[in-house]
Length: 195
Image 1 (cartoon, helix red, strand yellow):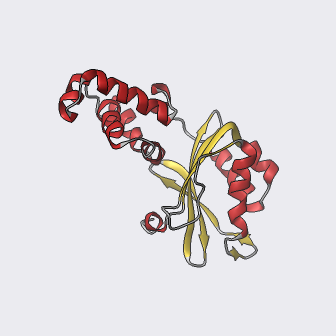
Image 2 (cartoon, one colour):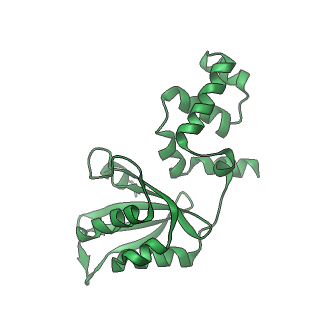
Image 3 (cartoon, helix red, strand yellow):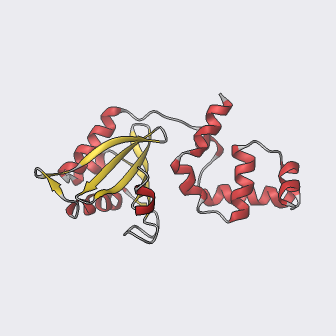
């Protein structure tokens, strides 16, 4: 069970969160949380004191804004929730979109400096819904509706928006309590061409 839980740390959501850390904080976090190293082993590996490693780990967890329990929590997202979310996207229905979002929703986007993306995480149901529904005006229409499809990425539910040129946006969804809690948007063309 522990190995399965540790594998969950490799989700895209975790990768996005790890990007908030300094290189040293990232190393300490991965060695401690993902690989299960003890602090003396980490200290020897990175040539810092054990006390310093504990502080780096604590700072890393704080920057990521997550607790140990949240790291190991896995929850299966219902098909109905994803269907409702996609229907709201397709219809451009603000009210329906807000209804499937958790009140503490956080959306993080990655444009890689090559595509438009939000510079900072977007919070609140209204702002996230506006952000999600805005790009649909620019996506090409196929038979009068945006071309949106569901997918699984790193064993997480996701949606793909396509334009005439190919994939426009990939969104990875994380739900808690049958509401969407986090959305990770990828618009960086270098990452999208690997799909």
